[in-house]
Image (cartoon, rainbow, N blue to C red; front, side):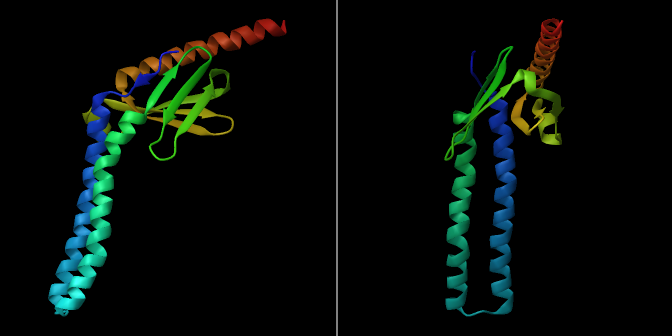
Length: 164
């Protein structure tokens, strides 16, 4: 089975999502600064609060900006007629193997940003759980669903013939 990397447009999506998080954090930090200035807090209190809020915000910003690239480098996926394999994780590595014969539902999902970048997510439902392959190109997602559907139908026919 050939393991595939995600398309480069996935990295764009993840950076856009990270930028939204960055804006939220900058908003919190700016709000703290404005509240301190308006309330007329002493410079010592202002400095303590800014350092207490600023240092964690700076660390979180660094993590938010680095994580998409690390996630992208660590994410691989692949499938054949018997199983789907996804490897992911930066700090905590995860390898998921889903037997095709256990698939009950396949769903393709898209949000507004994903539509603009021509990306889709694939949700694979089994009796025990759901698993998401976070972002594939829409063509890859459709091809994957079609091929897995054919593999699943072939497997069902194979099982029917064994029972007879």
